[in-house]
Image (tube, rainbow, N blue to C red; front, side):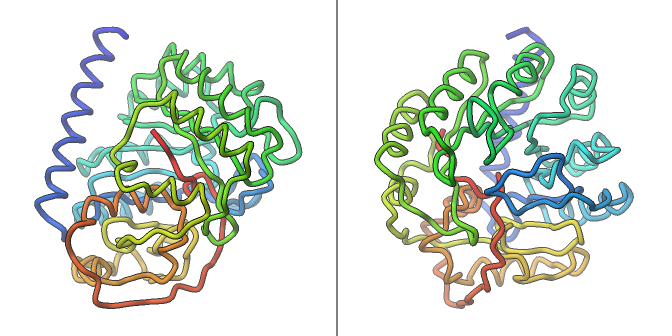
Length: 339
């Protein structure tokens, strides 16, 4: 790692630690929001329903307004998802809007549109984190997000990216060879990236137990990768075994999902709840949802929501309750990630 990258990484880490400290001190602000500037995707993975093949990009000025409101709510991390966000004609402007609020800027992408010039533009815009999910070694009818296709993109990222890169491999969801996840993870680590493994959930974000071969690969990849705080309560272990978890979901409060229409939802799997325009979402809404129990939580596999909620696992007993309707859309953001 170059001196420049070490300096950038150290600064990013300090901002992350500061955000966690603030989250521990104050519960009345979101920690993470995922925002969709582009529902259209250039791929059509069979397990994913979080995309279409026709939508237009959300206008940059409108994205700036939405992101500014997330900033007013005190959101610490804003991650761009989709669809495929790199299809947005001014994705760098979206990133700059995030950084303007002081938030940490992340992106989930399939990686197909990455080129050296684009990577450098993302550097200049201030991107902090980028994640690519790679589903198999060779493309097949389930997914074209293969190591064979994307390895050249990974080498470009290793050479040019100043931001942190995570490569997520997957098991479940019709992936033909579970061992592919191990090969993807080892390649990611060889290139100097972090690596996670995901369990693909069902169509409503609910858990499905791993088969014997999937479990073997899952265990092998976990041994390769570094530990993360989310392991401490065995959340992922229960999911792998098809068992429910007892936890306090803070979706709608610590975690927000902002769709392309500018509505706030619990997550990509429970769209329609609460379904409020972002411009109308207030601190009072954040406080209410913090104390609202969601009936879908025990069998949920949405790792980003769980990990954000875990900050407050020891406080804020939930007195309210709601049964979301299960809009049901599988996406990269719905993967259970193990670091």
